Length: 265
Image (cartoon, rainbow, N blue to C red; front, top):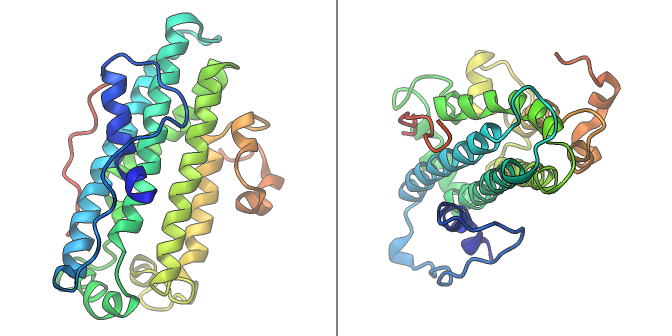
């Protein structure tokens, strides 16, 4: 199922480009996941190709969100008719790609923790890359996060209806993507050790586990994405929001993705 999910974004984009009205949960039929063989076991290659695929999928998320935002009615108010349909389709494309990215990040890390410690982590440290190297530093990721604040306002502008339901679907897909990152972080020692980025920023003095920092980041992102007291906020698990609910309200061309080269080594 995860192998199929990894290609669902591409399938959804093709159907959207063909003018289909997208519906939630339409299956994509692809061949079954290939079996691992001893001769094909290569953690470095998996890590590289998986990250390249992941950042390509982020471009798909950005395309879908751009289409959603362009369908927002000028001057505010609720979208209706063709605009609402366009908004609905665009955000469903974004949601499908976000779910694909969650599956892709698991694919990227589908090897043993011992190999990560011995072969992958050293390759992400000086002198192979600059100190504190992280995928969070890519322009693709930064642009995606910059869209979240615009989405928050647009979700309210679209009001109730299919586009609103599709936006809730996107929020759920975003939670799924963060869950996948938490899974990988824990798998490779992030439930105990700081990330490379944290260690570099603190000059080796940080004792905070990487997964703790990831939860804090995830909480801030989801608050930036979802309007207060909205159906979209309601689909975020309470455990993700934590104490942040006490501070509610206090935080402060469509088919062209960002043309950047991801900084994956």
